[in-house]
Length: 546
Image 1 (cartoon, rainbow, N blue to C red):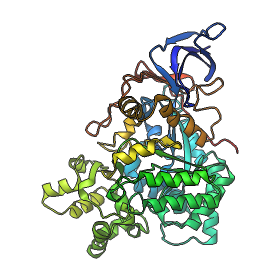
Image 2 (image 1 turned 30 degrees about the vertical axis):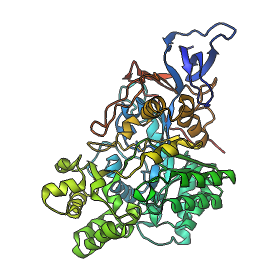
Image 3 (image 1 turned 45 degrees about the vertical axis):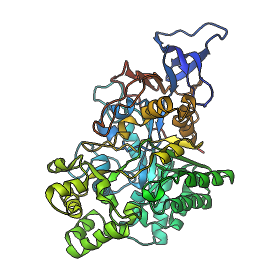
Image 4 (image 1 turned 90 degrees about the vertical axis):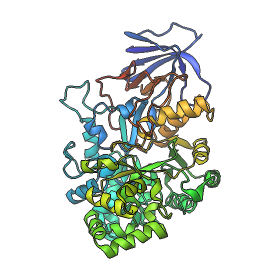
């Protein structure tokens, strides 16, 4: 045996009662689980780690991550590793970096600079792939020859084919139905991505150009996903004025396509949805009772996070980033954009008129705009003696669409109700870019365990761990992850239930958590005594053949 975790409180991921046991690790897998009082000798190993007083759980699975480039440029990646995360699902919200051609890559890099960096002039990542398989291979060799203990990445990563990027690749930024040839092109790109290891398809239906797709178009792509045993993960068309209808749309679409459905960062935001989580859960319960295969993820905070450009109406972005910047520079067109935002309620802002008091700047690509960070658009406008719209346009243009934001529109009672549902899983939606990112990037998993389990008693420890481990593993169809069980991958986390807590706050969002002294990826200690080691044991986790 390589390692024995002696006398741990095993919270095994099933949701059942915890128990005392010695857990032995060998060759990257769990070799033995010897319960206290069981017959036979206790396992021994080259190293024995005293785990008394600590809970041992499967490694946490972040079902909604935006570490697509962070994993390639940051071998430490303590933002997730220190939380006990051992697997992240990338390619979210319909926008990522594969499959692409040269034109598509340039456009998507510009569009989601506020999520991931990687915009024009950012050469920290080589972008030497064009296919899904090429990107996954790049993860597996991210730091080859760099002198670390391993050549892959800090934690494991799975990937969703991003539907917006696929549409961009096949037909550009046009707001129209695809031709038969273009639809075939999109089907082929999705099939190739799944064959190369992607676990499903994502959409960002408030982000261009993915939001230009009709339900019929999305259904055709989801039929391809279903044929590979993958799942559809939509950021649906509204989390605001039309939220419930948008959820209904996704449930119906997935049923029509015969495709499993996983609802991304599922919540009910904005004033129109205060106290309405029960409506969403009733919808899901009805669909589940009728045989639907549905799951969801959420983060345990009320504000959301995205980019400032995402708030704009979809028509303004037709043609791509340069066309959008040109429209903002034209006074008549800019006035129309403003009316959609402030009066009508744009589709980018979920059908709700924007409240600039709720839009806090969390990061800028242009260092000269740093003084805006940490202030709302309204507050910055007041300092400058101008209207918020004027400030917003300045940010969008001088930052070339690279501004990231927090949007303070959530409701705690909705957050609590949704996280207790039986198909809920944990997802950070963690954007690591920006001077003051959302603390969910560094704090989601310990915040569940410390605040909602220990402090509030909203979930039992055993139930919460199941939400963060076995449920997501089941959605990803991973036959050997998500449980503390003999033969399973030794992706494990040891934490102190009495002290585990998120250190990240809105004022200090990059503070690491406390109470998580040990994390193992593939049986190797990536966090030891609360400190990140030099081990790079993470790899791409590819779709299990169906």
